[in-house]
Length: 102
Image (cartoon, rainbow, N blue to C red; front, side, top):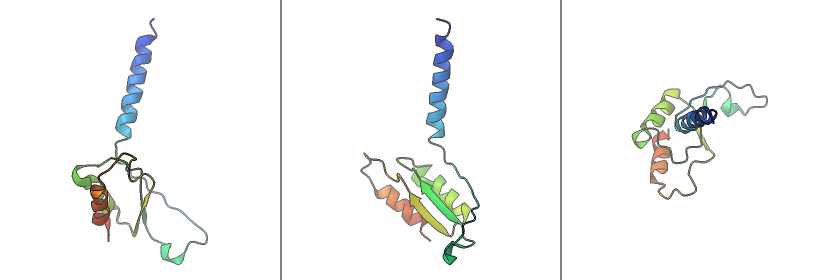
């Protein structure tokens, strides 16, 4: 019976951590060396946005947009899970894409 409380505490901590970390904006930077890279991409900075689902990252995506602008990308690509299956209002995501358009 003494194992139940630590087990519950560990599960609650892990669940809370996963919930919070899944909602945080993460910025990772990588430098890649690619052989046979098309000339248009040599020396360019690419920003890849993925797995947005229903997340907003600030009012009207302001935190996300500010982070993207601060990165000063040459190209922005959207990849994977921009929308959730049950998401019906596409206007905010379309407005986001328009705000990020150079």
